[in-house]
Image (cartoon, rainbow over all chains, first blue to last red; front, side, top):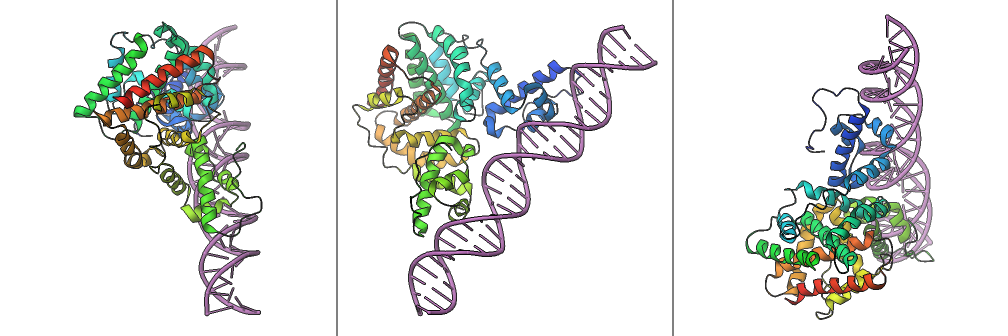
Length: 194
Length: 194
DNA sequence: ACACCATGTCATTCCCCGTTGACATCGCCG
DNA sequence: CGGCGATGTCAACGGGGAATGACATGGTGT
């Protein structure tokens, strides 16, 4: 389990279904993002939430339900628009140049999506949710000529960078880092600008 | 399991350790590529290979060993260079525009890598192998100024496109398809050319 | 203060899947 | 032809993890 931010209250919280539900959901998002569907264990999630695993069943109807809920909750459309159009490319590029362990909260969502997309068990859940809540807003944000195709491509590049960062074992440094940022920024920006 | 190309011979093959080993390996590559480490089951792999699950243990020392062998076998350096420099971008773009189910053999390897990279269980295995056998050749092939960074980025985009295709539920059609191909080709080609 | 429902806890069960070891059979070599 | 090692088959085991249901407990309304 290794050191997930303890969402469990020091003193056990008062009996409050909504609060525990929320705590479970929060813990689940972290675990799923970090470990994927198969690698995340209900016991661990429950423990981090300061709750009992059995409650997951009660509140979410099982692991699938929990995942679906976490997914739905993760891709609520706010937070997507908050990029600056001008500095978008460079901002993302910088973020991606950092090492995987220095995660920004902003990429947690994408990490989650990545895991969801690449786990055959959960991929089916994605389509509807992603299309409606994710690609839609991105398309709008991106705007202009051929926005749908460009949005697709943008999302793809983003995900790809995420994976690359995931696999990368040592931090990017020196000149390579600079070039990487430069090229990545250009690539992304070209998709937004035009 | 759903309809994997039957590698099992019609009439059971003569006792031949090498042949069964190979059959198991072939089946494993398919299953791992399709379902990831966790989602691939030894019984299924063995069944597809027309062998018994116990043999996996004998020949590969367990699931881990089988995965490692499949990984190693998948990323033998040949087959990477066989892209034409000039038409590279467009070729890949076309491939990615196709629906996920119309897989080309050429992308199987990447699919495998993707699955391997995104499964926390197997990611550690990747670094050495990928760096040595994969990124190295790509760097060389790509050549020119800042090749390492560009190779990284190229690989990232490739993987991202793979994921996008994985998630995409309906085929790209009409104008969107054209624009997608156009932009994707340009993006990729720009990384190779320069 | 009492009762009743919602909330939480615990132990248990069940299932899946990798692994293991005992056993069967084939084929080669003397 | 006979035996022995290599190859293949089968059934069973064991661990891990999700799900289940019985039980405990708090809290709220009357």
